[in-house]
Each structure stands twice: as structure tokens, then as C-alpha cells.
Image (cartoon, rainbow, N blue to C red; front, side):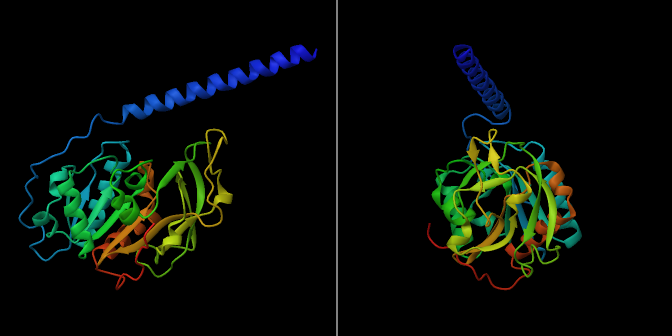
Length: 300
């Protein structure tokens, strides 16, 4: 009897391993369907409309290039939301996936740069230098979801200074869950028009450490008691505890940066709450609202 029970336990364990391996393989294959090949680096920039940066309207550069995971549904949904916001606010908006747009004479015509689920290695060294210099002398950056969702970065300044936290993983039990977002700052333009909390359906990101430790201005957190913060059927604990920031802002030199971990699915960009976040984030990054930036990020 004991021998048969032992064999049954081993068989059950083997079945679990096979199922886990199969799930991992399927996840990988699905991942490869939306991930490109080797990075491609553009050297010729697209022509900019003459009115960008010259007609008195605040100008926003929306960038959505990917060489890693591509959020095929979220990217166009986010762009449509930004176009609606820009049209209503009277902002000039230029969208591109051409990395050569990041050069000094182009960037100086914009008030804010918005990274729409950018992933992977997308810039040449010269393009990296142009973005860094533009931000550090006063440019404004906003990034959403996949723009801070790579497991590793070759460009350390980007993740350590511009984003402010290293992605550790996202929930998988299930991948998309409804949880409670709690507003931590009722004065920032990105969150001041929100209720104290709202319910949001998301692929919840976790980070290696809370960016609050580095002095950022935490704008919203997710309540881990309202969802399962684990991956792979509980094999990976992604909980961050009582302090799990999902939206924050900070200063980078004389520039501004705001990152939101929300926005994997297209539906997120139809959420009235999230649209308010995006609108206020851009207004703050462009220096239109919110006063001076008061939270410089500390070295990691």
C-alpha cells in the first residue's frame, strides 16, 4: 500500500512538472509571437510637421518602438486616448516609432516625451545621449506599463533614473486581476481629480524595491490584499507588502519623470480614472501644471 502511494505521489508530481513545463512553453511561444528579432536602429529621422514647437501649443512626442515584448492591443489604444486628450487640451502631438527622432534639434521642439509601452533596446548611443541631455536640462518624460517592464536593461540610466525601479515580474494567477488602486497624493496633477481609490483590472507589476526608498513622489499604490500577488501558481511570490507603488513621479536633473505601471490591456485606456492620470501626467511633465518638481531621485 505504501509503495503504491509513493508511486502515485511521484506520478502526480511528474504530471505537475509536465503541466508546468507545457504552460511555460506555451507562454514562451506566445511571447515570441509579439517580440521582434534583433534590434533595428534608425538613423534617418522622420520629417516633423513645421507647426510642432512653433505655433505656441505645448508639443508632445509619443514614442512606441519595441524590440522586446510588444503590447499589440495597448499601444494603439493608448495612442487613441492621447490623441483625444491632446485634441481637447489643444496640445500638438506627434507619434512615431523611429528612434532617430531622438536628436537634439528635434527634442528641443517638444515639451514632453511619452513612452507608450516601449520595450527592449531601441536607441543608438547617440540617441540615448540626446534623450538624457534633454531630460536633465528640463525636459519632461512620461512612461507607461511596458516602458518599465523589462527584466534587464543595458541602459542603466534609463531604469535607475528615468523609471526609478527595476521590474521583477507580474502576476500570473491569473494574469489579469481586478484590484484596488489607492491614491497616495491628492495634489499632483495626475491624481488630484481622482477618488481616494478605484477598482482597476490589470496585469499587476511588482518591482525589486519600492521607489519610495529613493525619494520619489508616490502618487498611487495597489492594495495587495485585493488580488493574488504571485506568479506561476504561487511558485513565485511577487508581493511588495503594504507599500506597493504603481504610479510615481520624480526629478531627474532639472527635468521631470512620471511612470505608471498600469496599462497592459486596451481597456485600461478607456478607463475614466486612467485617462485622468494620463492627462495630468503629461500636463505635469510638460510644466503646464503642478509647479516645480520637488522630489529628486536618489542614486540606487
